[in-house]
Image (cartoon, rainbow, N blue to C red):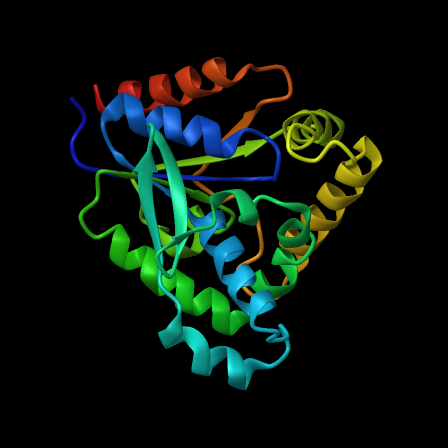
Length: 224
């Protein structure tokens, strides 16, 4: 058994981070935190309440009205916004097309990062996102950066999204991912980047199970 650690996983959209992180957490019997779901949930709240991403005064006033929690239902982690299950809604196009606008706001990032840090105090957790290894848990014992060729990522995301949205096109998904990459990498506050001590894994030619096993082996070898 490994000791109680924090496993931090960053990477680009569509490279398999979430599913892989869940499998790694299950293997080690660790908690799993999808930080991206938190940004999606808070984006949903502000869109519902017609609060623009550039209205920082109103954004700050509403933080006390927002509670984001996670619960497992039928073996799958679901995201709850103020006790409402919003897992399906936050994965839709509307949120995907707007989340970068809100997640790039320093005020929002600082608020959610403080919550994430608190959730990691007990360790024994797998946390994935875009600034986990560099900002949220820079001292994590294990740091992974996952990536893949953008065409591969777009194909994966398209296959997943068209189940719930038959009208979505591959071109739409590719364009969205390209925009997300650009915004995530160039935002002023905590941009997506590879931590100096992170292990980079290219998942372009790896299946999900292979990705998870690769990370599990890295962890086991480090602490064996």
